[in-house]
Image (cartoon, rainbow, N blue to C red; front, side, top):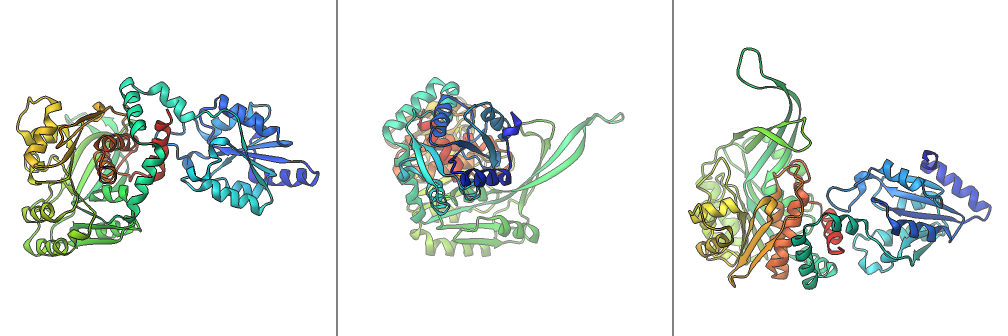
Length: 506
């Protein structure tokens, strides 16, 4: 088996020698994750076109089919393909597209399935790039007519709940994948303001040593640590994939190290970053995480913060920025973590002058009971979890399905979504329409930025489409992808769009 797996130098030389003898080299390229009948038919059809079939597969780090993919490692996928008689050689290509392998091997024919023939649907642009490279080396692209199967669809069908399958069918009737893509493309030209607290999230990974002989405590061994930009920068990272017209307003403490960290890691395409320094400290949340678990098991959390409201000088500066520029923004997103940035004066201005105001006011250990959503009146969209909403109603026993309308009434708002973890989300609007969306996954690695991912993506889609049902569907999917990743990591647009496409194909 393994002798079919070759490096690029061997394959380039092999191709050159065989082509000199007038032999035809065929190249097929893809993920080939979860090998199925469609793959077999495609490879057999490809082999009939020429003499030697080389199959290059995408390396694990470069797969973009969504979260929890690949199912099989590149080595395992290579082993599967090597058992197929029509396949002569296999190569693992560590690139996003096949441009490099085409330029090296110089195949006579590059063979793709007929689902790739319509270049208008090639949203990644990879087929166009591959075709251009192929022309340079004198090759031709060929599309097979075999029946199309989708690995993602086959995997999804076997794992989805009945409620989620029903919801997907409803969404497909309202919006095709192509229609959603066209709507999201409009975000490029929209002016966005994101305002909120800066939070530095630090993970200290430890492994347990057990209890010391003389004390009733647990001892742990330090392994490593990791630092993430959290708070408002979670939203910034998520939306920066969709728009180049994002302005950010936040504050940072007197520590120069965090100011440098932010400037170094904030997305390069952010239009304007108002990083306003104050005399207090930057909020940092340190979690001690058990390294021995595959999921992120947090043992203990420490807050470093000064959550007193910002001083009058800083408030005036932010007020003047907002008062001057608010009306130019198409959409305003507020990430309020209750750590002192959003004063009543600033909130009043935001609610008065924003064209489309979206608010996520979170409750945490540092602000419990004080950072309620009803501080923001007449918003276009509110996003919070069920417990945060329940605290705003001050009714411990209200039925979950009644809570969204109760909070919307308290805020005099237009739309609201409540996230419920593994139970999905529930959303409503001033028309009293109620939409329930089931969870996409029960596999949770880390929940740290799932709410931020839900908020930013659902707010964006609601603004663009005015569909709260699609908005909550998209938000749930974004949250599901994010809980599959450790730490506060921005949601990559390509990963999200490929995952969305795989579900809408089911």
